[in-house]
Length: 423
Ligand SMILES: [Zn+2]
Image (tube, rainbow, N blue to C red; front, side, top):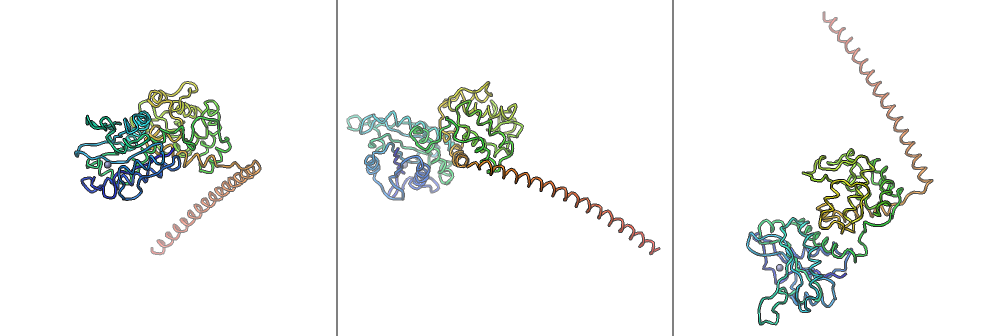
């Protein structure tokens, strides 16, 4: 999959600016470089410009056509009256090669628009085509935007907010917001092409780790004992459902801080994945599902993911399962990376599970049995030493109290003698 990224304008084209100094040419270049970095582990990426230089419109598509890219993505921010706001995408309808790219461009545009809006919170102006309306012209009925009309591949022009709107300009001026834009577009492209990406991380599949490996990883990450103890139950439900147990165990590590909890969910919820109640009002303990036992909480975690990936649940599911089942994307989520924008509004959520948890888990080596015996003996010895030290500490504290009491006695006697002398 080769994607050509095209940060609009630049060089002599720097006229599009916001009311307080945002320059579209610079903003979209920064978004483009961020997007390139996010895409690189999964796609081949080329850019029409990587600096503030002039690139003619024709040369932008010519480069993509020459490379026979699979997708052309032009990056812009919008201009209009101050009240105009939101994100929109223009996509191929009828270009120089006819309408052959229309269907695929629309499919990808829908994914990118959905994730861009979810990641940024920008108003959703939808996906659009824009055709030349000039009867008599040879270009009548063709795509209006040159980067769409001339691309010999599906082409999108993404307008990530209006720099002419004071609120949106203020957002566009921050690197954090430009990162969110890049993350949203990236996730949209990831979801659109997930089946073609060799290093995406499937949720469904047989276990690629053992219970001992899960536990060894949990220990290394400083997990609470309850998180270590629940690992074999994850393995069982993995086999029952066909979902990779290590993926959900890694997710639980993220959701529960390795069983230490500390947020709105408490250990008594038996909720290993932060699953909400049917109609949550906020993020309090009452807004989270309570399961009858730690093992039943694991069943709930697997059932919840079943609604995402389209597998039948085990037993009677909890209420929130049915909420997920009713969503338009229910049953379509196949990769861990896609959980962002769905399980959590953060577009990085799924990538974080893979990057910060699962990769480390899968690389964990279980020490051989004799080494385990040695480690257990060492732990027992340290525990014993610990209890001896606490006993000694208690003894010291007792002696100190006795000594202080004795000192008090002497003080009293001394006072008595002094008063006696004074008389
Ligand atoms: Zn522009």
